[in-house]
Amino acid sequence: MKEIKAFIFDLDGVITDTAKYHYKAWRRMANELGFDFTEEENEQLKGVGRMESLEKILQWGGITLPEEEKKRLADQKNQWYLEYIQDISPNDLLPGAREFLLATRDAGIKSALGSASKNAIPIVEKLGVLHFFDALIDGNKAPKSKPDPQVFLLGAEALNAKPEECIVFEDSLAGIQAAKNGGMHTVGIGYMLPPDVADFHAGSLEFLTPSIVITEVLKHST
Ligand code: BG6
Ligand code: MG
Image 1 (cartoon, helix red, strand yellow):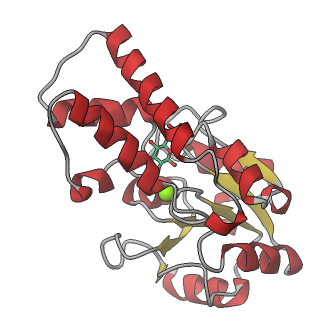
Image 2 (cartoon, rainbow, N blue to C red; image 1 turned 90 degrees about the horizontal axis):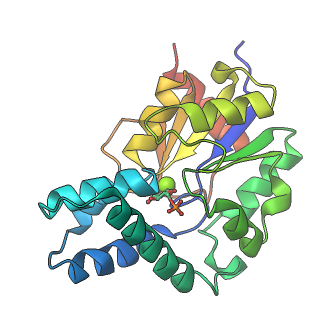
Image 3 (cartoon, protein in one colour; image 1 turned 180 degrees about the vertical axis):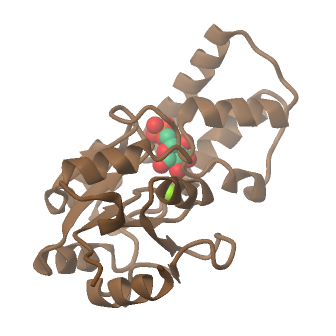
């Protein structure tokens, strides 16, 4: 019998909906540079690190810039993003997130945060769910952008779990690929993912329990 020992949660789009603020801030930057990009294009930025996201956006706008200007733009975007999220509170948790984290702890399953964001830890603190996590891996600790599995492998290691003992909860394609590249099971959260990319899909963490998730995921693994 396969054993699941740990759950690893992405932040943006799984625990809270900060993705809309990333989009708003990047769009503001693009608009100042004289172009725009769509919500569909924005999907490609989910789970992707700050500088990698900037590179993609500049490519869409057909813009080439020196490194120091790119750094200035990334800093400016982050400043706007921080302004948008400054009042974030437990009210901004996605439906079922708190309950699921609590049920995970009660079931004796270890939890880690596995986020590409360098702002992840202060956000989790403001959401009031920091204490649910046994390990916190953010974009500062894991510089390699998803789909590289680094962020999740560091999470598994911190929880003393093997990759095959972990289930990753992700809303982005890059994140699902990162988990698969790391040899982990996957739960796709939200409706933006293509069908069947994850072992199991759900609209949100609402109505899920750790045992439902484990049963469904293991049905799909060989
Ligand atoms: C991810 C988001 O969680 O973090 C991406 O899905 C974002 O959209 C990335 O680019 C990096 O975030 P930050 O806060 O370090 O700029
Ligand atoms: Mg995400």
